[in-house]
Length: 224
Length: 91
Image (cartoon, rainbow over all chains, first blue to last red; front, side, top):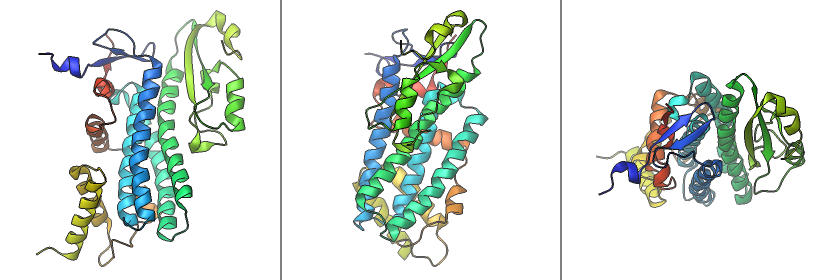
């Protein structure tokens, strides 16, 4: 009978290359799988919260119950997404807690206003679902911020961290297209996801690369 | 004998469970509403202020434990990735 490690394989986190390694295969987990996990998790939660939002707009659910669920789901999503970007729960630091708490403080204030608008019949279903989409984008951003933080902390002799914007499966605002066109940038210059006109609707991602310092000139501003 | 608030809470829990929420999570959310609810307020029409809601934004060890438990319990996290957020440092 296969043991638990077969059904639920364990992982390690390599701080040097900022990647997860599967203990089952010994290989690094492809970045596409990590981004897929991020997006499928966010989408599943969005579907549940969209169901609740429809219920509250149809007066089948009190706004207080809807708000209580939004509150807890947003906190869980922000924490899990940050952990996924950081290399796991054990790698979250007080600095991460502070950043996540700051984001949630902002989001919760907006959420209180959103709940008031719902209770007072000031939002249509389409508007409410669009606002929900923005909250989900904010939670998604947590992954990329945690990830960028680690990239910036990587100071190794002879190599440079660079990154570039990849356009996601969504309509793109002018900012995102411009960021994409900038190609590879020094990690510190890579704009955070959501830091654009499309805000929480942004579904772009970022690709990272560690390159030898004497080759960085050949990478910058290209899309190689 | 159940109070009106207890009956209200039971209805909300049943409603959330019917929408796919786990009973444990539904109970916790409704317990939060009832804890925050001012005396005499109607839970169908009460909402916390922005300050009250924002005061719950800080991340505690309990929140991390809750997020971890939720990750493991979530049907939307495939089995092969359940343990990824508990990754150990590469030797």
